[in-house]
Image 1 (tube, rainbow, N blue to C red):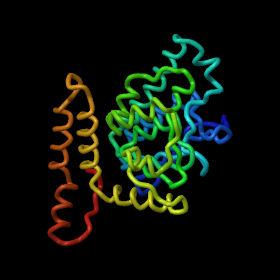
Image 2: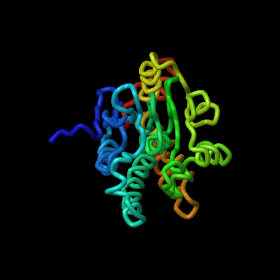
Image 3: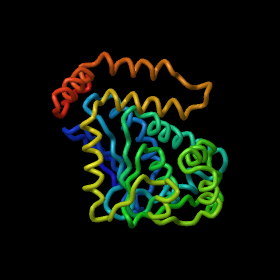
Length: 264
């Protein structure tokens, strides 16, 4: 049965899969059911060889996501015990995004707050419209922010910017988000989709096995030393050299033509 909120997926023939955060009556705030659905959605996309790149966006034009749905907090995040259970669900969603072996691009416009910003931070690349606004408001809500989430922002924007974003809980405009490295680029809102599609087009033209090997190396490098698996990355790199795509890339380069990669 359809609902007025959820995680929508659009697989396209060009190798791009769009994942849409939909809760329009609350600026795409993430309900518990949406957090629960994300790992399964991303697992399906990660196991589909036709999917080369995953793109994230919010439903409509007003918001990427306004955060976790605070209207649920009194019933689903009421005390420390419930909060711990809730955090387990959200952490599984974040881990599914961070470990997806496909490049992930977040297209951001309007509001990108709290849990929505945490989702965007899990992407590899963030393209923002010039009307975008960013905030991490836990200090205004009195809730504790989980350690892994803080680590994510430390890795992305560094200690000084992370401290200011968390301690002030203030809103940042797109220009400031770009200046501190929270987003990769800012474009006029009217051209956001076209610029994002152009970026996705550049990525899907490249060798899928190379993209996966590079993404795996990034995933492994950000793990704790004891959790790293260099053999996994080395296998994926070796797979590139054994692939038909590698032979095609060399032939195309020598022939001065565009390569046609098939992911095998």
